[in-house]
Image (tube, rainbow, N blue to C red; front, side):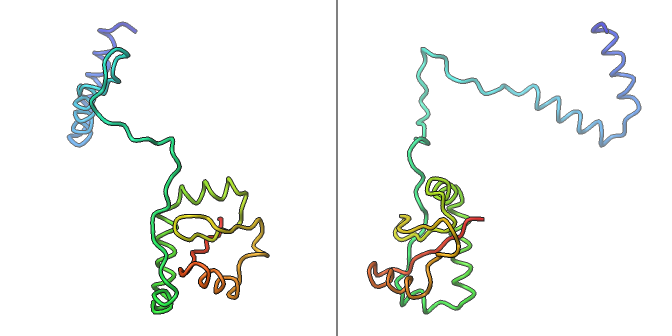
Length: 144
């Protein structure tokens, strides 16, 4: 189909559209006219600083002391763990994969224990021992 025939075909189609459809098409055309991002040419240096995404992801969040953790209502404890799991989704995925783990214990942004099966997940006595050794209440995350 020649260029002229294509334009005539489009005009015919446009005449049959309602105002909302025409407005949508206008937005698409306007968007297509915008200048596109161009990567800097090899000889030119960019003035935009780049973030090092090759380094390890940091864990975001701090462990509470056992007393601080125990003072929280049960609902808030669960919410804290869920928020940290969401914030650290990629970090946790990476650790679960690297350690081939079903669960992780995290203190001060480091996975200090892990296990390949939920059968050996830390129980309250082990968690209390971690609290005693570190002075922090550990976060226990389960792989899903």
